[in-house]
Image (cartoon, rainbow, N blue to C red; front, top):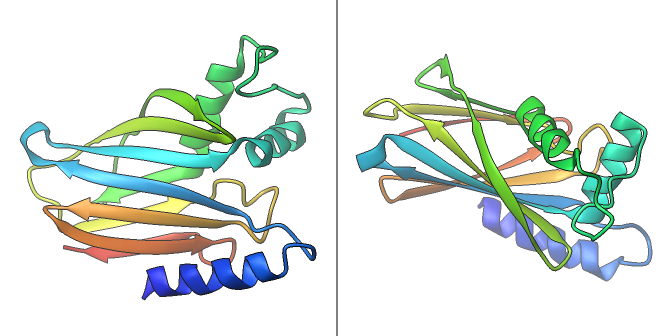
Length: 164
């Protein structure tokens, strides 16, 4: 159902491309049982993140370019760790930022989240870019024990709960 809503949103978003820009970021979470960890990847448009950084930190970072500021890494890490919260089985977890790379106009970041032996409840709060764009949508794709689910998190609904 979420995929259907996303596709419909994309069609309407693209059909009115002259009216306003479509704001979306995609997050993938995969549970690796033998390591008791969730591996998470975020994909965010660089220009959107750059605008958020300009508003929040009052400077331009030139992300993904040869002019990128040396302190950009620590700001990227801090920004995502402030905007993403994951509770597993009702307990907060620690997200570890691993690194990033640039794919064309998208910043791809990698994280790990330690997990208990079993995951019954997964609560995710993701406010990435909501401070800059109220229209922002954060797509969360979660794969736990080959049970794939998705969440669409928005400014008015930044949190979702999944039961496994």
